[in-house]
Image 1 (cartoon, helix red, strand yellow):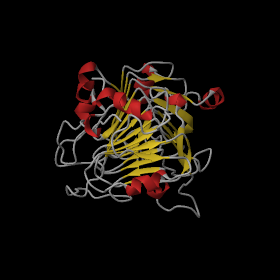
Image 2 (cartoon, one colour):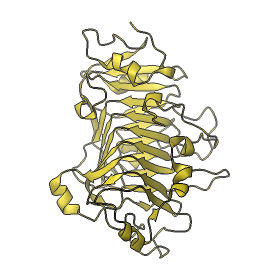
Image 3 (cartoon, rainbow, N blue to C red):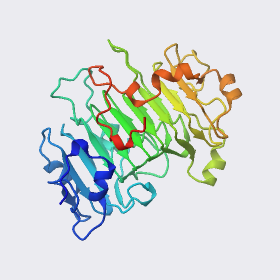
Length: 371
């Protein structure tokens, strides 16, 4: 058996563990836990020590119907077994749940998530103590996560919920409709060569998220793709969502025809919303204005949630959904120059620790960090 430390392991190391073999744990780090389709992934997570030790769980192909909750602080990796670790479309592990905030259902969006990575459910402390911060390096590889409550947006129905944690998703699928991904207080999230699907405000929160080479799939339109709530802090922060070298498009041709030129890149959850789309291809689903205010009212109007601190921007936009004249006429989207985009151009520029320290990228798989 090849013995590898999690702290230095990247896709090249995990590929050996993920390969289907007669002994599933061949090539895996010592102590890797194996989960079969007849077993529970959450039970394996619950069995891990709540300490700083690195831990790996290998999940065999199958459909798992359960909610996952990762509270431990130590590095934790969930691996989907696959012969094709760099081809997301050939993932063979699917973890799903069905829950939403609807009348007679859940009252709190946090309880609907398929995957939660947080020290406690719905953690909302503004300034955590060192021993309160959750998982400092969570990683998921080649796993599809889906909230199957409905086939349209009926209410908040989270797929991934992150708070006080650093989390990386590599070659994963994340499928929902409303509020698909929540990046909450003091959370950092990195998505690499993954797919995120939704309809209404499906990238939202008030932490920091970076999407690199991601397919953003529109299952419909409502609100915006991004909905961020900025925070005023004693030190400078760059909380927000950053989409780089990615692709935005309708789920299929019929959806594309129904939503043509009506979808927005985002809207401000409060007037400190920050998001940037860099060098990203947009299909014809995107509205000419790019972004919108909260209620589609003119910026500064009551209920617009758009103010001097709102930063909804693009750089190097391309595809039929990028309309420079439309952006200028809408007077909401900022089209950045190379100088203006500089402070946000790499994850190293935007991710901070909960103390506001930079850089904070050691939790990102180095093989998936391209700068």
